[in-house]
Image (tube, rainbow, N blue to C red; front, top):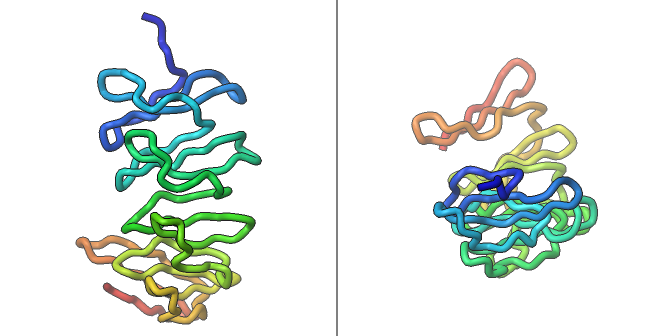
Amino acid sequence: MAQKYEYTGKLSEGLIKVKAGVYPQYNCGYINTLGEEVIPLIYSGVKDFHEGLAVVRVGNWSTGKCGFINATGDVVVSFRYDKVMPFRNGIAKVKQDGEWFFIDLQENMVISLRNYSGSTYFYDGYAVVEIENYYGIINQNGKEVVPCIFPACSAFNSINRKHTVEFYLKNSYLNINR
């Protein structure tokens, strides 16, 4: 039997992402472990499933939009975002019209990142944020609990299942162990 897909991903929550065709004329979808297409190859890009949802893209890579589908192919979050990161603990980091923010499953903005030039995901209720190469921490309410005054940091590291972050200031550092 001839190979049907140009790309086959790894198993992710019971499904495998696949791609048929050659750039820029290719389509992506998902198959099950028996090789049966369970989500049609109608997307321009797909990611692995995480927390029961997968990031998918419609349209081309430069002007297309991203959203989320569930394991049966139902659209859970509409295709209106320029970039998206997977849901973690019920929230996802998305970019729309040049602005990054976190949304919940109902597409409500739960935390704006307008004042920041970057952020990590939340770990144990906290995320590292950046303002012009200075780092701090916000909580899940978006409140800055460590101001962005540190010129360097090691984002959250998992050591013995505890999340730590280290901030560096001149010749000293602040270690926050959560």
